[in-house]
Length: 228
Image (tube, rainbow, N blue to C red):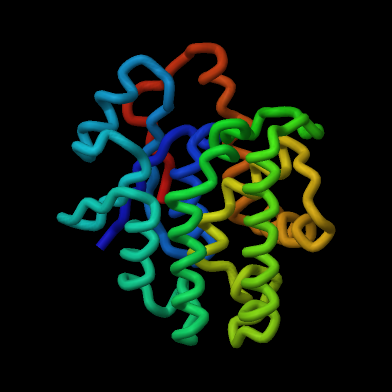
């Protein structure tokens, strides 16, 4: 059964990036429908797919799943071989806690470092609460790597070894840390570089760089559909 992911434009939509990059990294085929955010008629277009009125939205046959974390949970159940959550129970519980903390937290970082991949990369002054968010995230990432990542059965440079749901949840944070030039540690930077080196990240970024029609006000025909 085919999957369709409804997302916002790639430059701005941090929530859309999460399930998109998870599915790409896991090799899960899907079609995408892009609805530009902040454009005339965008809210009405999104409401056609979900009464919640927000992206991302996953259409799986007759089922509609919304909210990024719920979509990631659905994908983990639907595609168990993708191992989007760690296989070891203790690691899996820790991973879900880390993902949920991201889903509901870090409001100062969200407020002061909005998702904008077009933003020139340079250090910008930040209020103390943003730096406190940064330090908490750095500590969490280091804890994931030290406790579960380095010796994971699914090897790799990511939070729990292989790229999975937790990395997907924090992918927009990687973008924020990078574009706003936050003063991260060398270990944090190494993790960020690993994420930004993935084929999935590069594909998303390349598409975001082509979204000049948003800045020019030239909205495409609805809906903008890209291939499976």
